[in-house]
Image 1 (cartoon, rainbow, N blue to C red):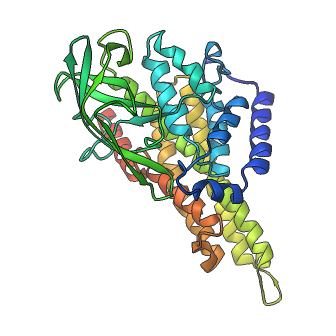
Image 2 (cartoon, rainbow, N blue to C red):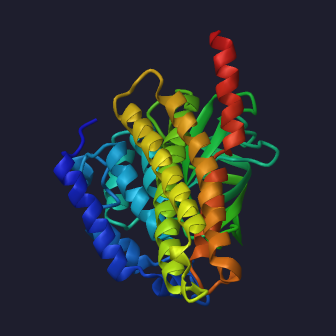
Length: 379
């Protein structure tokens, strides 16, 4: 997959930081998050991100994208984390667009242009009750119904499912033992029920019930009857590393916020930032963040290079990033004292988002067990 030059990557990073610092300060974040009757994110902001080219950064040029790689997408996700953006990047850009790109027919891939332009929002509905983090646990069934399908099943909480135009739904074909397919289901289709709820960090989404939902044959991703289990596996790996990149950006934000806070708070007649023990803790936060950044970058590069050990590297990045997120977020809260627990400071919201990133698509302990299992099999 082609990628941008080092100079172009720096320009992408700089444009993200400059625009978001100006247009998406914490006061604006609070306005969007707390808007009565709102969707929990900004449609106008989403459109602006599209105009900046961020939504199509990794999409093909024919779809209005930049044909960038996972590394470029990682730069965008780091910016998302640095400013704790509320908009549906992972569900729409990483998972939704990724599913269409990897599995869609030529006709279905035409939808990518609508995603890149900000006119189409998607939610990835794959996890199911009692499935835990298992990627192959799918009990939703798509039965043949005339020229199309009838979908019945339940999906657990999916971010932004309450506002999505299309739901990307995984289902077994014919029976619970059938091959795995992916379907594009309009959220407003008859038989679809979205149960809205907030996540721990306040972002909106919902669980999804499907009761004999009619889907035309053109709504099944792909031209044939290929089992898409490997596609789902690839998609989740992409989402894992995107969440890790977001967490790295958020950790950088936590560290910066904490440094500034300690410069303003005084004890014994001098700023808290002058105390050596607190300086050491800030250094530890920075080191943890940079360690996570390094392995996330390695994992993004491994995916771009289609390296044989790419998945293993992604899983290792998840383990390291989860550990770092817990440490950096916790230190940020502690160093802010009681103020760190209030809604009026951003630090608590960073902490909640880091907690979500730590567990999204599987927590660090789950991935560590998978790595241990793989190593035992190889041995």
